[in-house]
Image 1 (cartoon, one colour):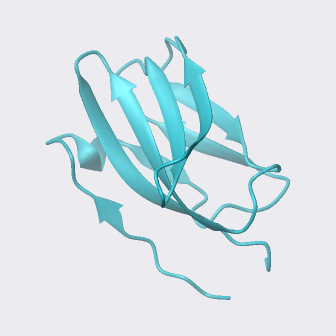
Image 2: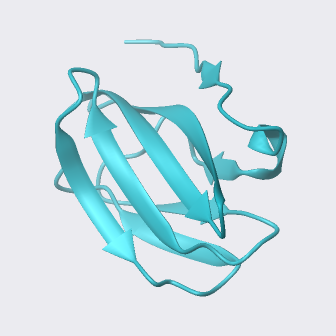
Length: 95
């Protein structure tokens, strides 16, 4: 299954957040990079259900493990100070 990745713009800083690799690779780590310290990360299903949350990371780089996410498309919300950015991420089990 091949898929394209789409960004959802929710702040002026959306281009400063990098999620790699996207699509995610089962069993591998996914790196989220932001130029500012990350306060919190949330991953939601497309129907709005919170799947994953991590708070007080206080670093510019955050690694999340994706081995327990089923194949699908998710929204990731990255909080820093008083702003947040939302991006779509894809977990593709067929890689």
